[in-house]
Amino acid sequence: MRQASVTDLRCRMLAGALVAFLAAPVPALSQQVPVDFTAVVQQKAPAVVAITTKQRVEEQDRTPAIPDDLPFREFFRRYYDEPAMPRQSPRQALGSGFVIDSSGHIVTNNHLVEDAAEIQVVFGDRKSVPAKLVGRDPATDIAVLKIDPQSNMTTVTWGDSDAAEPGSWAIAIGSPFGLGGTVTVGVVSARSRDIHSGPYDDYIQTDASINRGNSGGPLFNAAGEVIGVNTAIFSPSGVNIGIGFAIPSQTARSVADQLIRTGRVERGYMGVRLQDMTSALAQALGRTDDEEGVLVAAVEPGSPAEKAGIRTGDVITHFNGQAVTSGRRLSRAVAAAKPGAPVAMAVVRDGKAQDMNIVIAQREQDQSMSPARRDGPDGGKRLGLALSPIPEAARGQLGLEPGVSGVLVQRVEPNSPAAESGLRDGDVIVSANQQPVGAPSEVADAWTQAQRNKKPILLRVRRDGQYLFVAVAA
Image 1 (cartoon, rainbow, N blue to C red):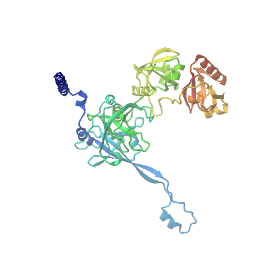
Image 2 (cartoon, one colour; image 1 turned 120 degrees about the vertical axis):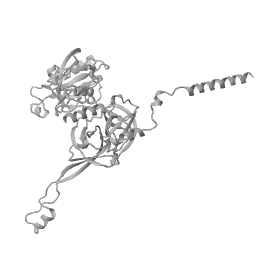
Image 3 (cartoon, helix red, strand yellow; image 1 turned 90 degrees about the horizontal axis):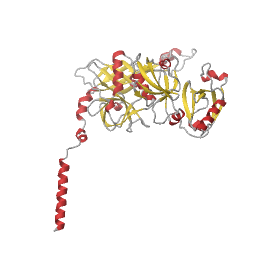
Image 4 (cartoon, rainbow, N blue to C red; image 1 turned 90 degrees about the vertical axis):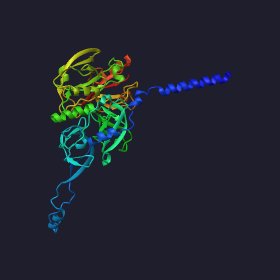
């Protein structure tokens, strides 16, 4: 009897728990998950177009030269159509794009339309119309086309790429392999990806299937807003393996608006080369690993940075009120700054913080501001360099300006700290621990002192016409 009562009580408890579970409200996340994306595709797919381009590539006519004394020369001239002329061989490219306004402006990729002699836009109903190039921006791979307004033309709505968190839905619509409107679905895999395609890399990574022909097409969120422009894939075979990249809408929209308004993109310019901080560089500069900032590897003469008093070896910690976490982020912040406007900066020089203002200039096409290349890991116990004074006869070949002192790296020992830190034969070391050097012994002395202090030696190196810092651990 006692056993039966206990069993009955347990049953009632389980039944009550089940009722409570079934009556509990459904979590908000489950309520937001759509059953499918039919509505988004039906509404937005008509705004996605295929883009075909034709480019003329000169090919040298392979018609053999006809000797003047050849019998029946007139026959051969007519047969071979002498004289031989370069032939124009058309080359076609295929991609995607999307209509952004009722005036007929279309956003696509720059690499799809650059050097195009003819551009055609193909709608989902196979209607093809000619397009004109409004403007293009190779730095971000964005281009804007213009077609005559079409009746009942569907347009897209820009979304906020900054709100696209990893794990959120991503819908790609485009024309892969020329198949026409194709829909693939995945998620935002990551943000702020740098694929080393340019100084402003800030890609959205997605596993929504992107293939050849998807370039220039839109990446939508679950609300049907464009959060990116599909532009690249990572694949050994050239087909989708689940790693695709899209230009964020915040970037694409700004660039497209400027191209429509003026035909060009206006960017800020500061005139420095930047180098991201490593543990060894931070230690050599007396900083901790968790302190933010980027190192100034070089300052261009006459640049806004030089006029503002920025020096080689400064660590930029803040720009326009924002903490600087990487050279790439600072590059984008400077590019977004309005030319002619003063911007507040904070730097650390010789261990002391300083505030300064810089008047941003307008970037020209041949000006660049990108993080300096950083080579190799840091570590080891010996320097491993064979150094010599710079031969006068080699100064021109090394691209050294008059008056520049330094020592030439004749050889780098394999597996040495110098090799592991990325130093190379032919590098010119111009300073050690922020002090100019003109003899191998000065580098050796600085290395010895670094070992005593148990700190990396900080070398400033000129390589291929550019300066960079290298920290070699003692």
